[in-house]
Length: 429
Image 1 (cartoon, rainbow, N blue to C red):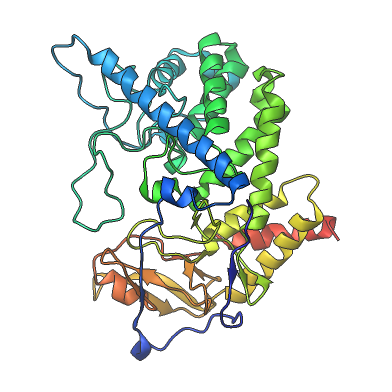
Image 2 (cartoon, rainbow, N blue to C red; image 1 turned 90 degrees about the vertical axis):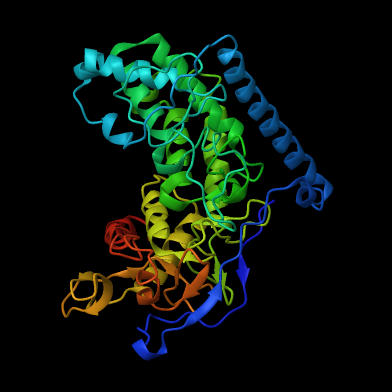
């Protein structure tokens, strides 16, 4: 099933900064529609069977993962403490000389990574890998999530079983890339087996329509959404493509696995084309996450509403422009996406901390480089902002004073896509 996100709305307009006096609440965020059995059963028969099989596979794997941990804990007098959290990617460098990946330091990292791989084949997030290997009975992921207020979109059904296999914050993706670097440098057989299990994890987690959720096995909530946010699906697609072609570090990938990985890459690329949001019939940008069944933009956390995302769209466009033989459809998506980014660029403004008020504000700065609102309204194409109370505003000032500080509400990252387009367009007339 591939439904384009068709939205009836106002014409696409370049950004016009709203007057401060006109700042207002413009909406209320609503929760992600669950990927429930009830919804799946409303699909046409051909689509329904594939989704029912997918749900069954996810449920069976979740049960197996939990059973494996219970079995380890049988007979233990004390359950080991959950692993500590931290920046996992910083502990798994991918830019060292080949000989480093056979060093004692790399062996510690490799042992830790392999030990924390879930039975499904994925990894949790935010776990430093320069720590001892996982102990028998120890949780696969970091400790329990904090208690959240009623109505928070990010309340897990089980606080002790959250993100058990995820692509959030680069998890699973980075572990596989590190293991592949180890295999390429040393031929380590345990690292090879673990990396292959990780690649198979992505094949099992892929939606029937070609997308990927943020967490698998499915755990509910917005984690079941098709996720572009923070490069999740983009990074998975890039990884399975490289592995499927045996590029770089992936010469070890078995011949019988490669066609399946390439097929997964192609299906994912088709999804990218199908989910480019159309407004008034015109293709624009992409949303950070989509309802997997309808392929329409959906919410994530309380302050992350259905919207276009200039940052995620910029990252996707950069990925597309690196493809060696883009199809006509891909070329059209690139051109229309870049045109939309150009139209939404904001000039002579900056998102900066203001000492007098102790918060960031969107302020005039003549000569400043172009900047973009992170989220754009699906009707007006104007920047919008959310808070923990699920209120959507047209001014970042309303959000900053409400305590949602530190979030990247504005970004200059989309400029990377526009810069890359200059070279790309010269090669693709």
